[in-house]
Length: 308
View 1 (cartoon, rainbow, N blue to C red):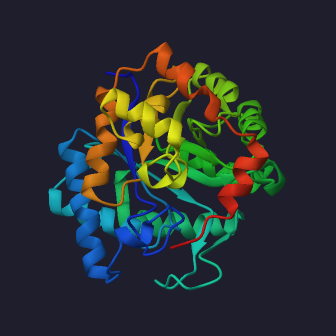
View 2 (view 1 turned 120 degrees about the vertical axis):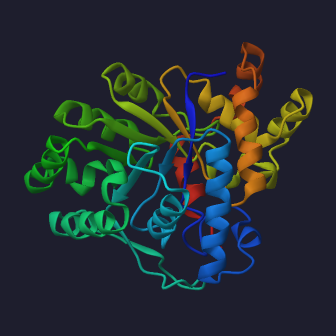
View 3 (view 1 turned 180 degrees about the vertical axis):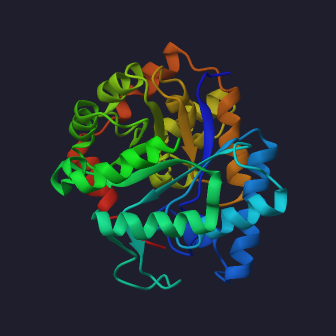
């Protein structure tokens, strides 16, 4: 088994719309109570499958609330699982799919204070890691003294502080975070299409930060629905699913500590967990090396994915 662990990200479980390919097929009924039951079913399958890291965010609709009710139902105590969440985006879709804007970014210290209070009200002492959501160099959040003071206060209370990064300048943002210090974890996009941050992620790992990989399936482009022919053929040869191979690639990175599954159904979660049994080797590495895209092209394609 790889050294890295699989975690469950709740981006696709806490709201009726997301940018994963075919998400509308996974959420046929967006009734809140039904979606909470579905989220609980996936969380149950994850826990029973050995997953012990759960990742949410304030902008994931009701994800934190669904996670809180699941933790209570299971009778889990703080520390039984690692719970990470994020601040910086506000969910604005109002539980609808057909809206022009689903979330609004605000990395001000006032928004931090509001969202941290909301997270604590829902998850209490379960929160072990709190992250800046999609930090970028141009946002200025890494150099905002008021924000950094608040984050330092969290660390002083024993809560680990992290950041997530996004876009073609992920590597530069990670390097800036390493230079400023004060972070315990970094979460970045890495997948068979987008590898541009891996040198900086390796540096973060060497510096002692926990490295979390998000979007290892490229929002569904590296799952069966994405229909990548090279990946599909390789998966067939190994007797595995496309998603298991793609997640296996992320798990095989020596700097990766945690790889997020974005499963929206129990079947998807179980398929994702099969990546833990995949034996990664040089032949797989060479076979799939040609899938890499230029970062600008990858992120442009991601920006065009519809919310469904």
